[in-house]
Every structure is written in structure tokens, then in C-alpha cells.
Length: 95
Image 1 (cartoon, helix red, strand yellow):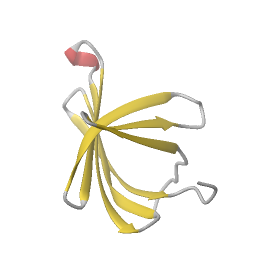
Image 2 (tube, one colour):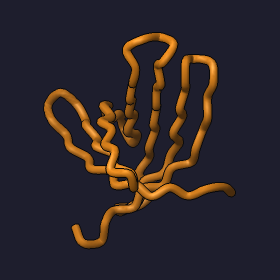
Image 3 (cartoon, one colour):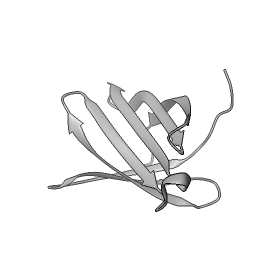
Image 4 (tube, helix red, strand yellow):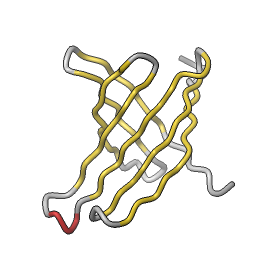
């Protein structure tokens, strides 16, 4: 129950880890970094140079089918306020 958000998530893997570029409707890109462990992908995004402006995003995803991943995204602002969201990613059928 709640709002739905549509974003493009582009995954890239290198020898140093996983990188995901997330672009929303406002075309505002965010780069998440992470790793793959077993059946799970764990991603992190940190924003803000000053502690009072820090925003952190943590995403944990698990493959459910060959074209779908599900998990949770937690957003923490100033290390005192946190929100949790369910995440479902589907592979673009044109790929």
C-alpha cells in the first residue's frame, strides 16, 4: 500500500564491485555501489559532506525470477530519521 515510484536502474559489474545508476523522472542520477553475496545484492549510496546534511540509502535485493528482483530500500537522513520501502525491479523486456 502506498505510492509507486518508477525509476531506471542500470547495473554494471567490474572487478571492484557492482555499480548502479538510478535515474528518476526528474532525470536526477544517483550512483549506488555494492557487492553480490550468494543470492543477494547489497547497495549503498551516501550523500552530503557535512554530518548534518548526510543522507544514506541502503538497498538489499534478492533474485526471485530470471527477470525480477525484490527487496528493501532504507533511507536515513541525518542519522536520526529513517524510512523503509519495498522494492521490486523488473528487467526491461526490450533488453
